[in-house]
Length: 338
Image (cartoon, rainbow, N blue to C red; front, side, top):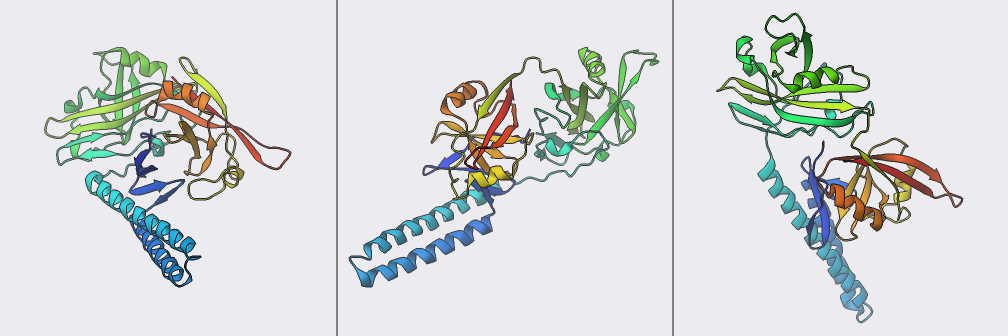
């Protein structure tokens, strides 16, 4: 989970975030081309207003100031375009397109990879909650695949981030607790002989519990393979939950769009994102497409920030969504965290 850090970056008092080659301002993501077009339009509009203001002074001072302000917006968008282009230059890396027969939603993984010709390292993380309302209890991302070199498997055929399956071997003559690892129905090795064997068995019922594994590391030179393991459970032990009623739901966001309109499209049970704003010292709540829904009160935000900050794992979703007597939407969310 992507996750990803939810912290806003800031420039000149404006919060922004870069994700998947786009820059987020307010609730919308923009490509470098879109930002470039907006900056040009602001420049043109600002210059026109200044030209109009000159013949009608002193009344034209209003148009003059407005034109200068709009030109500043154009210059700001030009700067944001440079930030985005620089970020793409620094962080652009090849990624792996992966598929799996495993019964799990792979799209929830943050699909960031760092790859060279011989060593491949995944930076994917398991989401805090899966599609069956199970919560992540434990996660490991560097579990050695034991016995890989004895399986006569071509390591170059392995794909980073692709999921694997497991099979118990109670009749194994060397270890009755052996758990084989399969990649595309081909055995590639075993779970290490330690407490992980018991954990995999305990989380393999596929109902109350779920075990997930994916290829997290490939070293072709050393013929080594590692797994990322995620252990999910519907038992919410060691989890805290906070219910938050959203405030400022009647306001407009940074781009001038109505939060009420966004709430009208929301659904109970839908996941939401929390982005901490250092301007207002609270969390801005967005739906899963990035549209703003409201904010958490400062009192609750302060308590939540002490626990999750802007990097600790959590999961949040819409818990209540109603319309009041005035026809305005009210919303409550639940936040699960450790």
